[in-house]
Length: 576
Image 1 (tube, rainbow, N blue to C red):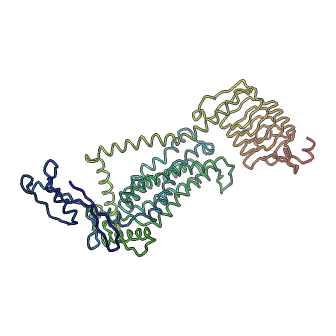
Image 2: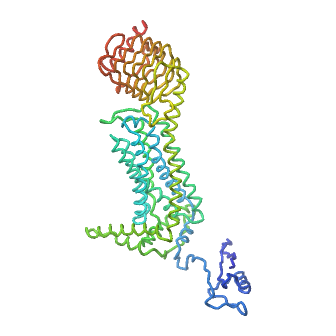
């Protein structure tokens, strides 16, 4: 087969390279006759065009039934009509529109990454304590979004072939964003699980359709690099999710909203859903895929979309017209038949429309498992299963693992510092079990430690120092703090039962959501600031249980009364 390059010059002197692939006569062995090759070379050099078969003479003459014609795909004809979709894309060019498409698809892809990964950070927050989750319930929360994606990819993928790529993308992103936001205000575990499933339903639709929508608007020449660069936004979305979690979840956000207490993890989920809604808004301004419009026999609209893309890509040359005047591209008749059946206002017409859609869904599904595509379907499914198993398995588990390591390091510091009691972890199945029981220590100093989900029993802290230490979801029973200095100490969502604070000095001590029961405060000095008031805060979520909480022998009625008595007047602080 002979392939040559020739050139033609226009009136302006510009040279346009044209690829020629002449008609070639082959024998059964695939060899081309020498005489035919020479003739073709001469014809191409002279710029001649011929649609007739080359005839050979003598021994190289081939029977007519053995001649094979190899033709180049047709380009635009003299009437401006094209019969190949790739040719229509070629004249559209590559420019501003594709840059905008790249950014919009990137926002949508990043929003999917944020939505998928956000639950891993939420599970390591205070949500589990708020809902009282078990290990099995935590596992369901990690998995439910993928269950939604399983059904969503099938549902939305089919709808994208029936009603359009753009409209399906817009709807799936809206479903993702809306139910992601609603989940942030869930009053209980069941409602939260339901919202996360519906959010996953939306994610499952946008992920595969973004790729299809991209592919149908990019020429083969640019398609590979373009899709590869778009995938970078998934990593950017992952970084965005981690950054939001780092900024929001550790913060002290807490405010009432009706009967609901809004905390940091709820604010994080709400912010995580914003990119999906932003993507839906941006897709509203993009046109439908011309390839889809051609498949549903709407070539007029497809041509209009191609002209819009051409105009955006050639803003610097506004007078340059799109040369394609018509589209004569073959489509699958079954696709057109199904779309033609959609319509009508009567109940019978709607039922027939739904039945036609379901029939088309079933037909497309069965095609994947026929002999021609069965091996490819199984191989691709296996590859994607293994990738997802490894990637999402590690990603969802890693934040909780890092949290456990941090707690383990904090507990390690106690091994060398001592106590006269025990520490046990309240959630043994969710923790690493290496530090279930720590005994025989005499605690003297702890700095920069964070303790969570612990039971501290029969401890005595005498002449010790605590600096930048926090206890979260921890229960203290029969614990004594005597001669202890507290600097930047926080008790959060914890319980103090039969605890005594004697001869302490406090600076920047906070009690958030703490229950006081049978607690005695005696000679506690809250170190004053220059204005004379101490740095002590007991929030409105804290409560006094029973009537055995006292400050210097005076019984306390509630958390407000407790803070008032501990801080005291300026004269009382000076006396201490």
